[in-house]
Image 1 (tube, rainbow, N blue to C red):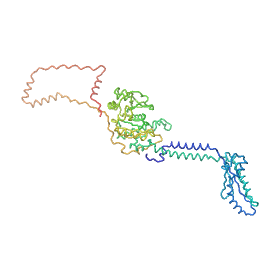
Image 2: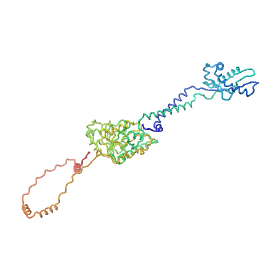
Image 3: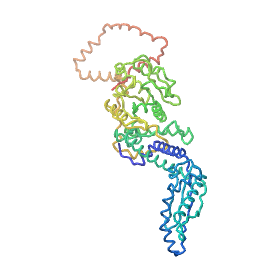
Image 4: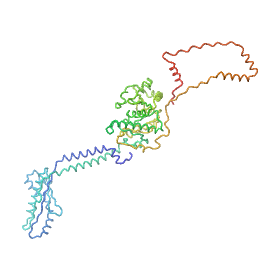
Length: 531
């Protein structure tokens, strides 16, 4: 796979990234809303040391050294059992221990007691109860008469207004980040194993051929206006035909083959678009159907089941009987037909059929593969002037494109280039920047089938009486006396032979005029020669 920038890979596979993001956020939301809420309330205790014999500095130093040891007592049974008893909690000491914590901010004599519960009121009640139980325990343990330590509830715990867990915003953010990361990895994996054609550089890498034109999607609305979409597609096909002519040395091909890369690119709408572009230039275009159209080609549905190419190859009909005009176009159409024909029989008559076709139109176009019947690539290969490979954006694979080009080259056809179809309207390719001088032929392709007229042999002019007499006189002058004697003897009367009457010419058949007979005699002096 050709190395692409990460930005290009992500842009091509934005749908995979979007799916991963949606899945990640949805999973995070499911987790966030499935976790029961937890409320946290905090009560603050203040340490006081009373000693009549100690100075203020000594009491402060003692308080700072002593206060940190009280935080460990909060999770002790001596503190928690009275809380369970006072509040009548349906909890064990171990369960309550997991819901209670105490901290001492640095360089302070404060103790913050935090309690968690499923409701805000319970959290506040537990925090205050634990603070009171710890205060009673410390007062009892640290009472030495003149020296005593007490913990006073400086800030009581209040019911919180919002749960402390789960933190839904954080969880959703993590889900978004996880989705983006998973989408990026998925895009890179798809780029590694996905070989569908999306870039002119992909086509060049696989086949070495240039992309001559890119046709946008015709079924999509262009800015909400279907008329604009249709005109855009028509302009793209017109540009495609112009570039085909340019790549062919500036000559319009008489027989043009479109070879689709895979079943996804094998749609009659592509040939109809090129035929319409040819007809728009004022030339007579004729589209020959190589295989009966499938059900999704609605434009040719009216021609289904009609006689066509198969009958021409079997010599059971004539060209005027199977040539029909296409709806909405000046172009002509010959259907694939309904008769059964073999490749051997078709090979014998195809040359004469193509001769009649190019005598009827300026450009004969067909869209065929190696499997289409009655007309296939190996069958028409000896007569094709220009072949174009049709690649459908994001559908034709690398293997299908390589196989189509190989089939053409094996049949003796050098494809001229590629037309990329069904391109998203938002995509714009700078195709000219990808072309090289070798992509365009200096001379047009040699015609394989063409028409020549054989002129009638000119008649020698009859001699005039004056010229005859002059010639005889000159001969007599040179003859001498003997010649004169002979002429005198020949001038004596002799019996004149009676000419035989010629049989009368038969009259022309009834219904034929002299003009028709003259046209028939003139046509005898012309013939179609197939090289």
